[in-house]
Length: 216
Image (cartoon, rainbow, N blue to C red; front, side, top):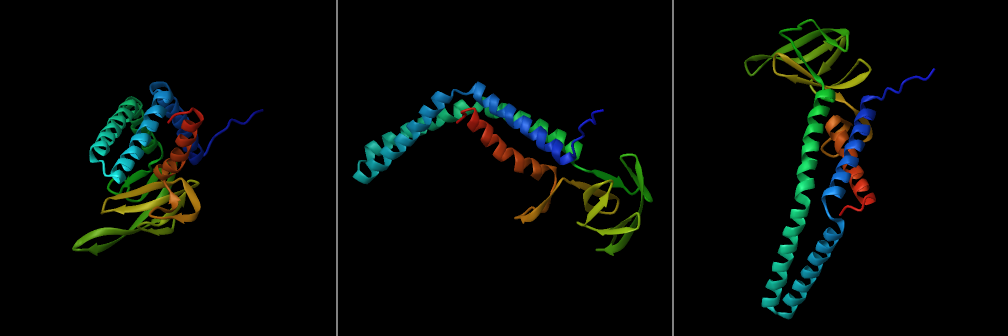
């Protein structure tokens, strides 16, 4: 009997992102004219070089003429990219909304669940530690099944890792950590959420598929 394949969250995001990267590459291939794009690109490089030569020769009139031609070619390049760019942005925002809903984590409202919370059908015991901060009582720590966590700690439950965010007095935010990297990424750290995992995949994947399809 075959066991159905059940991808983990990071595998799901990886596969979805690859699929969208392929779709976007095909959109660019279908809506742009690669031959014309290459010609416009060559024209831009040509006018740029000629403008430099004219500048060195002290011919200001020719320099301005070539710079104007380069600007026209640049506008043409932008025009050719407009339709696929707008459609790709639509895919991008739809995908981001879906990924955020699926893998963005969840909130626990202490007013509704002061002693426990449910996640994927499992109940976890919850208690909070509060202190007076600037004259207001705020949550500074939590206990989940007798495990203590402070703000920005990594909590482990349900087979996943969660970034703990103590947001004020009533809300506890658990952000799903999708990937643990073997090294720390500047400004990001070593624990990637769905958004950074998406960025890590989509940038090289989009470049690869566009190259394979001959998209400029």
